[in-house]
Length: 377
Image (cartoon, rainbow, N blue to C red; front, top):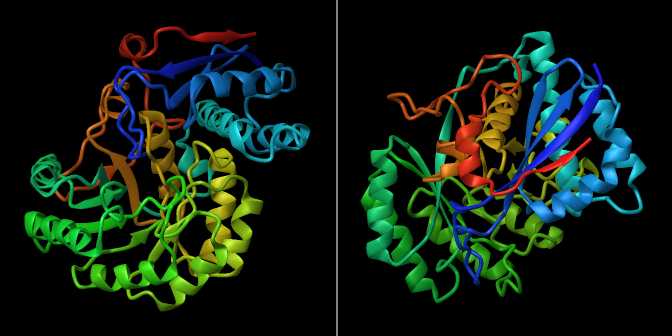
């Protein structure tokens, strides 16, 4: 089965603000879906956490290498693309595009085999998993209302992130965390994401350590990105002394970039993002390297329905998985597929067991969020 064409779908119209200082408007394009077509009439879907223009430029580079390739050899094809674009890739938009292609190839492989991707990745360790509703911090009154709405949607774990946490003073940070805990009560798990990958992040290890002590008083499950993403030694020092687990790694791409973090045990929880770090192929390799050193793995996913579907398949096949990230509310997750994701009465998601990634894109709904697709053949 050979690859014959590829379509790109930049998503606009319902983009969720990502927390950066400049903010994000609904019409901004931060995510791109792609569809890989084959001569057997099958289509595999992938997702890239990158704008359509960047993915388009990367695919223009990759397409001569991808066209005519096997549609059922995801690991070999993805690694070939990576190796062949050594001088123009090694991360960034090229790796992000390879990530989406890799997801699509696994989706195709599952369809051909009549199996969910999780089984092809090694087998199912679980049938359900707890999603944490991922939202931004805000002023206390707004935060309270937002938390109430997330709990009302059935979530039993919530991650709060980015502005204004860490941007004013310690007293205000504690007010936000106290507000969150009082709003959701003791039975809903809370995680805190400082957003240290924001440009010119001002805080260091001492701030992060003191903040972690405050978070421990409120039963926070983990403290995410409290330092700039390249501060490997700072993370290692913080992880050794923090009273709450430290999480990070969402901005890293390729398994080689994760190795120092794993070898140094620089975080308690590693967060590979399969929509930009190399896809399911790289995420699986990273996860097993981490698991062998007793480092927890939770996939990062500021996501689309295809990205979330990939995270669910990945989490089913990793024995140490415990959570998936679920951006909420998000039309690119909730309104793109023929069958929406649903939480059960325990606040868990059933992992799809249909062939491939287990979800089907509704093309009519997709047209609402993609003004103009791009075709390669």
